[in-house]
Image 1 (cartoon, one colour):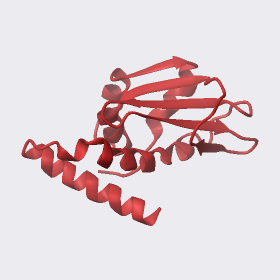
Image 2 (spheres, one colour):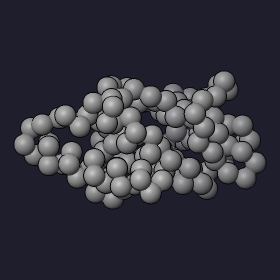
Image 3 (tube, one colour):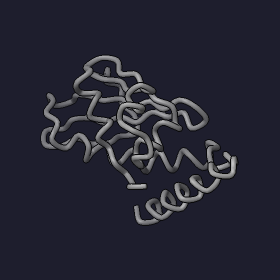
Image 4 (cartoon, rainbow, N blue to C red):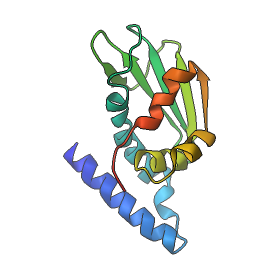
Length: 137
């Protein structure tokens, strides 16, 4: 996780510079997928105090170059991020990979993140994804 933290900080600071000069090369799948995978770990903290029945699944889906899915499952005493699940999600949150990295770094307002995302299923349960913070930009 230490290396992942270093990578995400490096990526984010360079991306800010690249955006300022009109370069988007850091948004390739090869570079964004490890970033988003690391940021997804913040979901466990965002959902920490969210009550739900055991085995409840929240699915976070990213579209775009780094399209991917992250599964958050409620266990008896905590939420756990898992690689995949055959359970039906209680809530599915879909957003672009660009919206996701900005959300996780607070580089986008909550209103903008919500308007650029879609929640299917349990709306209240899905809204907690917007509390996730991976890095403060």
